[in-house]
Length: 202
Image (tube, rainbow, N blue to C red; front, side, top):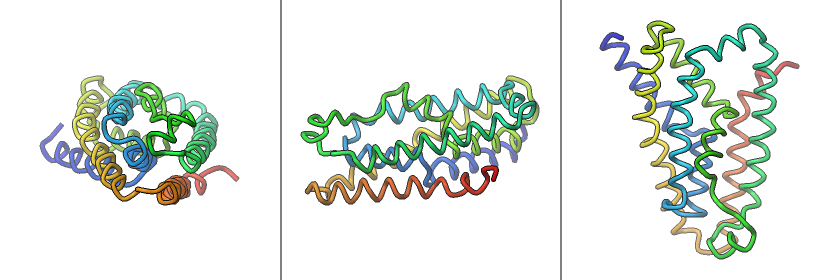
């Protein structure tokens, strides 16, 4: 990979990782509801899970979509349904530690966050774009380089959203404010699905 290509990959990974999307909105909501420490497994699951996703997609999973285009449409439909369910969970979250314990509310685990990448439309777009634009070849080393660059940049970027949520938490001193925040986050998460909904087959 040339220096220009590497620079382009770094910029792309930073911009795509730090801009709003399902992962970042969910991390901000988790930071506001549960704090930074309890959201660490969620953050690690996003960073490591997405890096692994790039590797697996790069070494051949995308060929399945090329061979059976309907499988990609099915994945997008499942993604939409799952994200709508997550939006409902966020909107109905009690938040605030005492209430969360009473209702069983808790942040995503490492495994849940890592698996979520596979039904996250933005993650798929980022992975496919990065591999097609910045992977010089389909060799494992080329794919691994793209994944490593994203891994090093993605985790710090998404962590900022948790910090933002934690700071917002200081303002959410009443149940009414927290409910309003969670409903807003849920609406934004549903809104992030608009490009996916537009691309679904009629």
